[in-house]
Image (cartoon, rainbow, N blue to C red; front, side, top):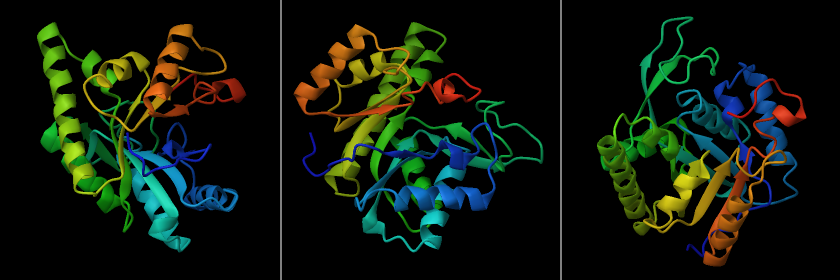
Length: 253
């Protein structure tokens, strides 16, 4: 368990900066980032959670550009980059990306999944490039549950799980060189987190769409209590089921 990080009670998500469900104007995105900085009650660093999957790198790119425009010092922000998706070719106008069609709006680029020792490092390097001078200090493997679930056989499931473990080996090496501060996981299915924490020493876990106002199963509560006893930081994401419970149009993301 890392003793070097203390996270605030509220962490700011950035999927909207990547055009999730709606393509916001750049000036509105800047206003959002400005408000996150302004209303953090003097808390430093301000923590942003991002991912290469969000708009095929658009969220990372937008966050970096907004922070640069606001003259925010690198030491005053702590950026989490959930890794596993890598920006690739430019899309033709009006073309849907090959990943999650119907979810993202007006994307310029496509992305491919890269979960392996080499692939996760490529995602990390590209993410820092997109952040325009800022660097992610919290890193994780993004949606390992979906990666394993995409396998067509038990043999492939085992191989994919090994890919995940190899990706974490790469992240642990980054941490050992002090290039990142802490290693975690972001997943919608908390059961894959339960499996991985027995194989990888994680500093933090992000549980999404699982411990919400609508759904809070006792077995998950028990697991979270176990994590707390281990000293593992828990980030609870999408507590309103992706905004649905506060009037948005989509249930979970």
